Length: 77
Image (cartoon, rainbow, N blue to C red):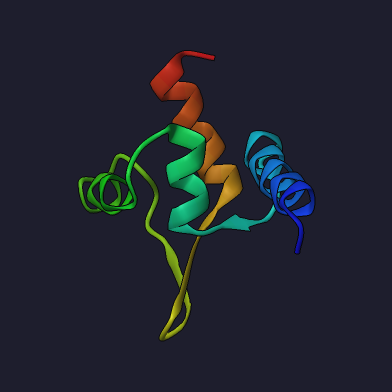
């Protein structure tokens, strides 16, 4: 995948969070909030982010609708 295609894919993932559609990984949420992946997990443990959904032993995702609601509370949008 070229850098342009990779950047386009990242932008699409971030747009899905803003739209509240689909699911996102900790890596995508870290980019969205300009935070580290460990901060995303910390926020989740503290109840600041919704609980993630474990799809498989190696895949955990957050519901973008719930994440969008958190962002609106956090940033007052």
